[in-house]
Length: 152
Image 1: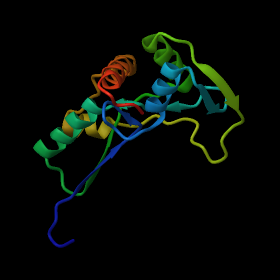
Image 2 (image 1 turned 120 degrees about the vertical axis):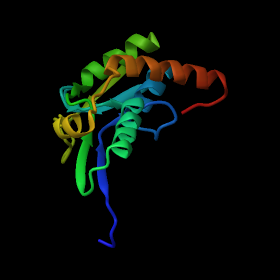
Image 3 (image 1 turned 30 degrees about the horizontal axis):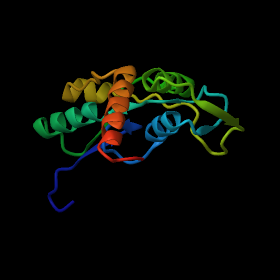
Image 4 (image 1 turned 90 degrees about the vertical axis):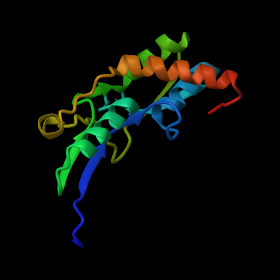
């Protein structure tokens, strides 16, 4: 359309410093402050949490390797269950979370594994930051930002 050569990049459950307030930001904040965490289901829902540095690398690869009119998924390619995310946050914050489990969320996505094979093949994309390392970096940033006067 109009001679534009467009590539669409789809990212999934992106987290990292200075991002939009989302699940991980809220978990880190609440565990750090000793506030209760309300979550849906039994902790077995699974998302493909992807650290921001990996998404940036994927965008750079797409810019360097133009494939017009293609759609690429950028993610880790494997999901992490929510209870694992909670335990990682607790580990790096150094506190146990106060967990209030509620019923299943109507219409919620319970499992999300992203197929990144096309991005791997055509862009040479692969996620390099593990979920654990990403959570560790996120908690470190949160603590440094809190000292600097920023609070979520």
